Length: 428
Ligand code: AMP
Ligand code: GLY
Image (cartoon, rainbow, N blue to C red):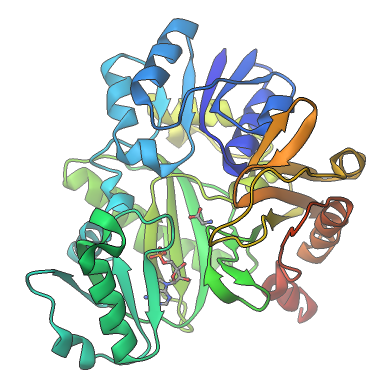
């Protein structure tokens, strides 16, 4: 079979790499892909933009693509699943209506409240009803969020009421374009954040291996929020008891609620959860896609055929499927361009990839492009180096051996990926 992966980041490299290992797959196309997918055996880049749904559907139809897997939220929220379905093209992604869970925070908060799923208390405002007195009456810190997609930048944790009013006013004045014309103001939640990702079809669900991401740019979880600076799997915080709570209190009621609302869900569903000190799994957000960089370590651990799992979901046979996992831990360190997540440089030559290829583990590409035979930086999150090991600590050592082999001008990365998990291992 032929598979099409839509997107160009590290997540899509990992998905394409995994699909290409399947004995059922003759070729994987990636649209548009990156320098890493260009070099991957049995994988070929196609110069179609991830949001050009018409051209993607034409390509899938012409090539006889048996399965399309969509990486980023953009084309999903824009309705790629509906457009492919209308042309009988198998596409593993939720419908536009179901993807509102990621596309609108106000919609999601109302959904969560309606279905009694744990989440922070909140109020929704737009320009016509914004109430600074409400803000002044809230406990600090508090959180101000733009309603729509803002590439992970539309969330501000505010330590003072003045800062919250400023942040809200900036969003409502158009600082995030349409994404901020509606805002959510919510209570700050203490606890530890995890990523809980499942494959879903209607009310059938297959939980994937647990994972944890580091969203802040700098060591010690400081500095600006990013798309994610590193991730590992499994997340030792998620005991079997917590896993069961997440399934019963979050995932199952969410899928049931979507069905009751007339928007049954098919695809990867990513719940960003803040686990409170008492173990309550509060929903921070949903993503209607796999995580980046969570995908990279999770794909390294997945022993089952990803294409079969996606096809089983699309056919409604997910309840008869299981996933097998490598018992080792996997840990990925993101290597980012200087300046990320603000303005960053592109076009710097990357050295050391040949040396890294001789080491154990795997380097997935995000923002890279191939210029002749030279790989150049071409985005904020450039690479994700993934190591494996019997413990998170040994996986981390392998990942940093890869990182240390690779260089470009002004490369930046965190040196403490996995610190919480490693502290837990050491206390055992
Ligand atoms: P979101 O895009 O809503 O997931 O928010 C981005 C990041 O902001 C999250 O990953 C959290 O680290 C942080 N965050 C969001 N909402 C809250 C909250 N209510 N309390 C504490 N931290 C939050
Ligand atoms: N790693 C966070 C995300 O994919 O949204």
